[in-house]
Length: 375
Image (cartoon, rainbow, N blue to C red; front, top):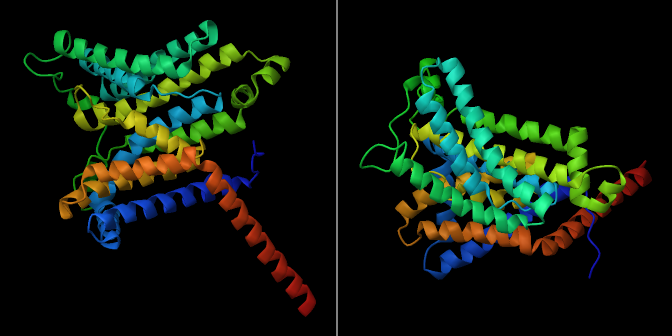
């Protein structure tokens, strides 16, 4: 077994994912060319559809909001040595929490109701993350198995509640929330300030996602709790020797991870749909796994990875419209290749990154020698 390749932090966070993305798009280009389409035209349409207009940017950032939350959820658990597959279920249960608050506490003023809905999402998501964490820490159940199981339980629970308890008769959704129970759209705020802004689902949850990324960075890299979580993830035996409790830290990490996944519910339920409906997560909890892997479990990397996947989702929809031979499934293939390269084939790109870093260092040293000799 080869020794791990040490890289500068910037190369680990930025260069390795960038190489993975370039390789993934190269493979996708070959697939596009193989079906008789122009890969360069497809790339232009993809970028134009996602970033070429204010409306496209709005949709891209809307998708990125979901991916930031779910990516952070996976990353925080990953720092504790856990692979949280349950973001989808945690977001689903968080949606139930949002709905219960917004439907049954709408007598509160908006200044209280909106924060209460956000806290409801975080609390319900945290609970759904805590239980697998407890089972791993206290009962030895594998976190991957339990989180997958809890995804199915969450899907069953929301169907039962929406169909039999809190939903409207004859439809698979609840009644619409009160107007003061929703998070405002960004385009509405811009129009109120006198700007011409096209309609898009982007809402102020995007800024909450950015704040969550800063909070996770501060927790993981600038706090004693974060240091303890990373210690447990790196070496549980050393953590015990240092007087830490791996079981407690595993439960804490999974609880916080579930709370972060609840941000997806805030964006979708309070920010866009304004009601609880089935399958509102749309698989975005699983996309968070790819985002966390590509972002190297670092909040800054996760933001950029989420933006990339936002470009893929929005640009892919426009691409499928302009080039019918390229379906949305092709976009899923691109995302899958990115995951393959960023995860399973990481070592290949780490070696390539190490060669590029060494080449850059050699060129820089040569310039310094030449400058000194010329002086």
